[in-house]
View: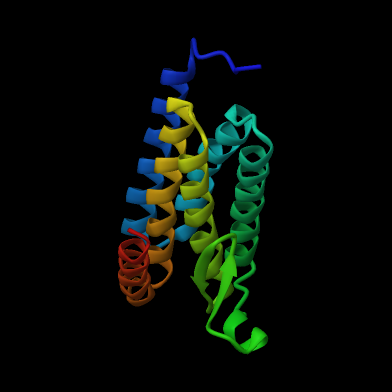
Length: 164
């Protein structure tokens, strides 16, 4: 059954503003946790709004990855997934994801999940939330390492052009 939309525009606006505040404060203070914590309401509301099997699973996984990202940042976990797996990239879904520091892989996976949500959902509000999550995922990567952000952005553009 479709979720009510009476307050959805107001809630989407509020969580968008929270995510934007998180981006601004996180980038100006150099503290990524601001971005992560203020994106959490958006991810939780996305999980609430989604209804299909694949979209519900994607949105719940997105919340889990966001929480894991917060834990990794809080405890300053330094773990290179590429070295551990012995490869620089892996397929997640049908998307080739570059591997590296776990704190960078998390927001990369979140960006991919938000694209999946945007493509597979029909609701305007779930698409709105997916777009906010996508943009904020890149802000998280930029906050952690601006150099990796540049490489990841180029990779995303190349991958997008390859799929066209």
